[in-house]
Image 1 (cartoon, rainbow, N blue to C red):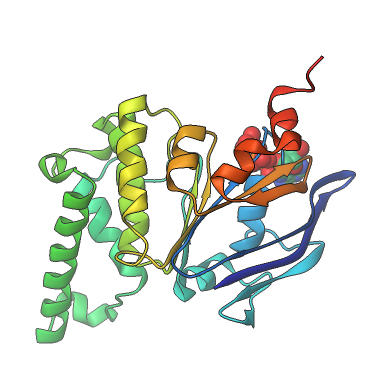
Image 2: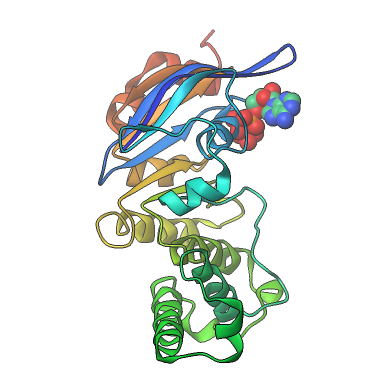
Length: 252
Ligand code: ATP
């Protein structure tokens, strides 16, 4: 579904991403891992059009979408989250979800004031979908709580929910387990594993929580100093000497 071919990005003398290539097939959860500064978020920014690559191409359903604007990528079904949470803190959890649906569902200016039956039906559908996503996230009882008052774990879940409300085909999550405790991270892993085929087609995940990565990934791409170090199943990556060295340093 998503094909990354020879992607590179330099910032002056810093080669943040160098000749990276991998695919995200339909139905899969692919994880991008690597030590701090390896170039993972830069990859996300290149795929979603926040950065223009120095070299390389991004293909979506076989079409070249390199450097397509983030808004257009979102309309095509590529929805991402950010490391720093971007939910609207003054709105309730439910209002955040309602708001997120409007990426796809548009209403003309005048229809806001004089809604017709079609608009009323769309609104009812959005309300229903928002409730369903809150339920899926386990936030049903927190619907009317302001996002700014939610716990870190709840906020992370809401963020995934907001991304789902935009009806992604590919959901790209940048460190969704950051700040979660073990129990919360396990819950998130279970939730993510159940999304492909039901709520999304595929997931591309950047995460430092190895437990979660090993539980949910169909394949893992390992980056180090901007380059692809390895790619394989969780089992293959766990046994890869170069990967262990990148994370833990060379054994004496
Ligand atoms: P982390 O796990 O800490 O989030 P990462 O693997 O996501 O790290 P990136 O944030 O992609 O790594 O950064 C890769 C390199 O590119 C780093 O050396 C970083 O300082 C540099 N970099 C990223 N964005 C920019 C930018 N806008 N301008 C200059 N350098 C940048």
